[in-house]
Length: 352
Ligand code: SF4
Ligand code: SF4
Image 1 (cartoon, rainbow, N blue to C red):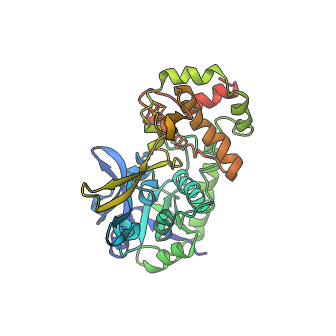
Image 2 (cartoon, protein in one colour):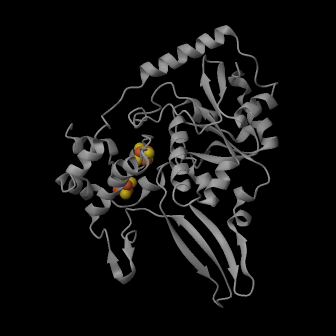
Image 3 (spheres, protein in one colour):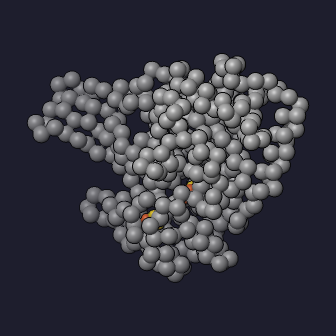
């Protein structure tokens, strides 16, 4: 069996070993908020985030698709002077990247973005970063907190998109299951950390997976949801939630599958140099659907509120055959108006 055992006490050793060979991104706290950050040693990593049911505030999308990014720089006399490869820190880093401690729902979220950034138009900026990254995922054996509904969105057990899956099989041991050549290589390259698996460990792994199956329960039905939303296009339910919404955009920024961005041209005062930037945008902002001639396709607040649901739960499933939500619950956690995506969907479904 290619899987190996790693002792929980050796996780810091693994991070230190990886940091010699890779740019390592791992869970840390920034101003007491759990986040993914670049780390140089295990002393910077907050391992309790992995084991104590916390999700970093921003999902790993910020690594492949930063909140603000220079796409290229140009000069009047020299043409394009730098492309994103040269100006992006992570893309420019000589080392490959390892993201350590990614939850299964976030693995699924990266998968959604990868599909979107590959389909129709290939976004090299995103794909280059994704290509040089290995993901070490930390399995969840139960819902990680009250706002999680990953099982409902079928994102708690991804089959691809990660290179190693770590699963706790006892208080002191984890099993490391490789899922790609990159993952197999990491297990091979650190033999002092990853050790052989015993028959008893295999049995404990089966027990852990059985426990996971038992613990996860579907919260509401997703099947047929797209039709329910379409049938309720004119429903008063949208207005009800629109009245509460502050249109701050937080839910879209923390969402692992939201990918909308705007493009800005920053030009020097003498008009000789400039750069093109892209930065996260939100469909909840009034200017999002504003086009030339001052026409706004979603002028009214309820149109904007409804649109996010149409995009995630109607358009993406129909167009790409994938869910536009992985049930991470971040939008619930960070909504200042206490709007819960599950309540909206349940009301639309008529089960609340
Ligand atoms: S976080 Fe809440 S208040 Fe802010 S835009 Fe989203 S739903 Fe509205
Ligand atoms: S819509 Fe909310 S629950 Fe679904 S993936 Fe986005 S942040 Fe997570």
